[in-house]
Picture (cartoon, rainbow, N blue to C red):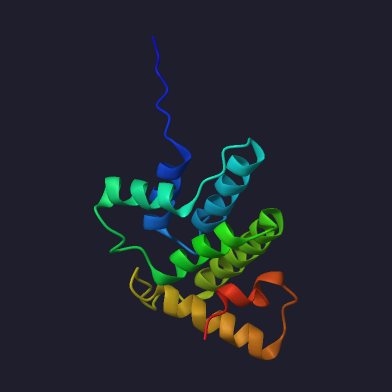
Length: 142
């Protein structure tokens, strides 16, 4: 007999928060999970997610400031579908920027956010891209 393991939504979010990869689908998954929970009438709040993070990792240490901003923006959002679409666009943009880096340049977990932030700032300055995530004030990188 096969048993499928399942996790509560807040624990999935906690794991996505810890991963927090801006060039993968971690952040849009967070927004999508929150949206689905709201849709089925079981919305999550910060306290449930906080408990899951602390159960799994003891604290929020190791979860990036940006990832926390995305979570807070999603929890406060009136339109999770729109935020989800914006996050998907940012992730795709970030992925493409990371892939553009020559193989001889060193990309690590510690500098990936800096690389993505520089690319986003450059795109905003040029206003080359007409992407919604570039205008989302709560997630704006300064």
